[in-house]
Image (cartoon, rainbow, N blue to C red; front, side, top):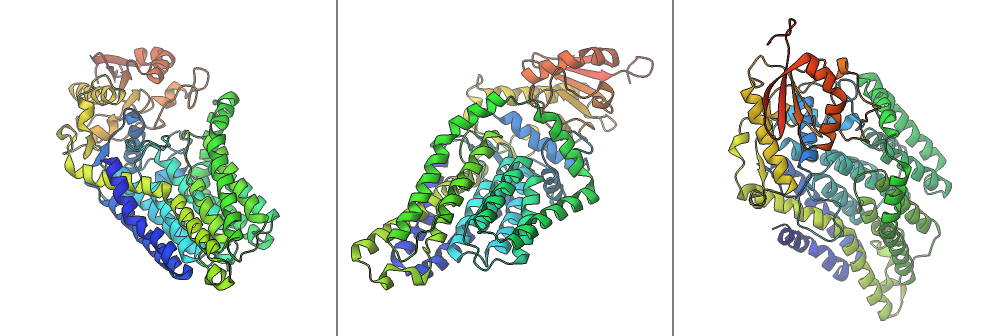
Length: 555
């Protein structure tokens, strides 16, 4: 279904290639831009109105639980880094708060949050790029960014198009907005003014408040663009002022910026440098293909048109690709970045691909060169559409399959209502996703038997990679507890939260068996749990403990 939907979405965008081949270039710009903007708007609408969340991946279900827990925490007013530990920036929390206010929290809160951020990204792209680039470039950048935000597709797969994991939405959000800012810094300045520069500073601030590594990389790109005079010193200062003012305002209003930096400082020492270097080496090939390919494409476009070759765009393309590679080195994805997808668009903008006055028909070049330019133009658009076609195709498949299969009735009325696991996984009980799903249902049943679903029952804390149970029970998540535990990445035996803070309001503790993070957490906190809690239920997957009363008896 996903592959077929990808082909269908590619067919929907195919007129863009036809337009570039047959229409006068300035007319093609308008057609391509409009088609891409309509496609982006359609993806946002689909993401916001999905009736179910359809999951089809052999693993990463426990990662999706972190998004469900974020939605639950946001619905109950818990602020990231202030009320609970989180190395993810507060924008993730803010967007889920909006989603929780728009409709009742359930599994579709995740695609709704994606749609909200995608809409914000679209607006920022329109405000920052409209006076700088032509309409075709604008539409392509917007489509790339929006498709990146809303897609459920597994980003680690370079060729396969068969899985939907909804993995780490915050990474997609930051990467998408980073692609917009990259286009602004690397395309010719055009009629960019102070308002656009100020909004670019705001955009970088938003990126920083999701993933600080992405924002730092964009500041580095700004420095390079300023050195090579693609961004004036005046505009660079305005960008930095917009960035500083936005961060200061966010800190003043929420207090989450400094708190988030403190959380990031804690986790920054966990990942070993050797791990990052290995990731960098594995990603260099992909970065080199996009960087060198886009630079060569720019030179060929100029060679077959009346556009003069310049040194600056080649440097900016190479630096932008290196920036994307370094970002990937710091994060989960093994490959793919929307920044790569905008590189051919940047090349096209510099080469005047959509400009009326840059046509070979008007410059008197030979017919063979005109044909070569048409071929290069089609190739440019095709390269730019690779990622959005795959991401958009996955979203089309999500739309169709979320209507094809019914939601699990066992989750009805919970904060995960509307979740659908592809039926084929139920036939493969040994697969990780099936094991995790059955573990979740087993733990849910145990907790209800133990009284955790009672109206006056307190929060449930899970010693497990992630905690799906507060959303299942429609209860507040425990205070001070992060949305995921990864041994060696977010906690360790040496660095972890104090017991009195960690268990401050947890009435129930459910301990996961067979989960590496859960086993390490149990090793750390077992003495405290056994002293203050008593065992009330157990299964092969979980053991449930309930807090003792003041006299050590049942509450």
